[in-house]
Length: 197
Length: 157
Ligand SMILES: [Zn+2]
Image (cartoon, rainbow over all chains, first blue to last red):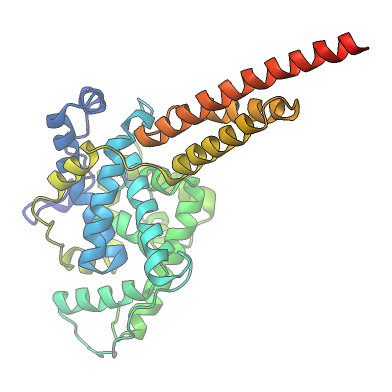
């Protein structure tokens, strides 16, 4: 899991960048080493913030949820089981924090459609790449969070399918079912907002 | 990776038309094979639009703020305060009515709870330990009073 830059080729997207948190850093951070704690917070703030930003669609909420997540991560380091994937553990905490805030703010279940404003459709016969991106964002906003999160983890955070299963704490088969249902819903929503996939 | 996924199978995978078992097999292959992953990506009509979507700017100092907050004393859990206050009240009641055998059972329950939450936060722990100590004093008083009463009743019989 890492942030691809525009210069990097697509093929590198899902290659982990070798900056995965090392056991020594976790041990040091657990023991109160401030530098190790800062390293962990800086390493994971990006994925955590982006995930919250894409799910909550509000900068202040994304800010609060991201900070809260990293505080929990640092305080719960003693609960992390050595040998597990640290990144999926962090993203699991980010997801739970996000769900709590989402329910508090919108009083909605994670499985229900969000209350995003219904944007006027903008029918475009030949949408440019940027326009398609705008339409895709509108379509994503229309999806229930349980479908949006899986697309966010796959397409933006470039998690592997098995990593998504770990973050969501469900079997791989469930991930695949959900991702295909999410894609169908995305396509329908995209048609509704006026795009042509 | 000696054998790659057949392009037709990959196409069905991207369209969500594969059976679940086959899907899982292809997914595991894609997790490990960049060649097929890139191929699947080219078949995905949304892949390019996803890449064109804007990235949020991570607020400056947010990671640092999280570290600072995490390093401060953790806030006292409400449940710890409630348990501590409850224990103090229970101890006070037990001290007042010490001598009656009934509090023995209550005391044991209170002490168990005190031990259970003993590892909590500072104020919570103080309340719990304080309550526990008072409760154990009450328990001792209760047992002593009970013993005295029992020995007296034995003498009377
Ligand atoms: Zn392959």
